[in-house]
Length: 152
View (cartoon, rainbow, N blue to C red):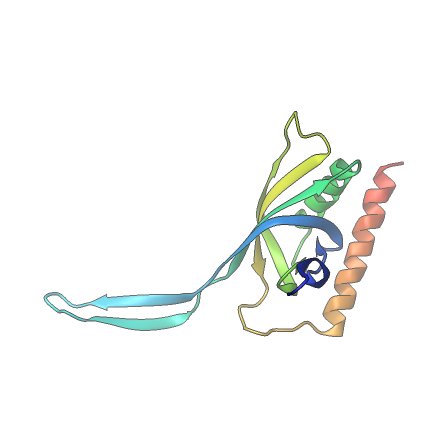
């Protein structure tokens, strides 16, 4: 039996780690449906791939949850795509399209987010070069330094 806890990757975006409660991938093809008046057949024309999107419910938990949430917000609002790692999908360049943060009065130490990430590529099996990975790591370190400096 597979030990899922040992095979799942730690999740992060631009170097800011988080826990994933749920993730959902939406994708497919763009289609033009040609229906002829009085006809009984529809002609389907493929127009390429639709833009994929990952809807992720994620959270921070613990004494530093508020600071981690601020760092994640800054990472999601930064220009351009960042390196996204999801537990089952691995790493990819993606842009945070939108997010919604949630906190509750009876859930101190817990900050949740619903985020939509748009991958930089729809191509199956697309991989990152060493340059992409190193620049993303450098951007994450720079973001961490900025967040750390804000504390003082």
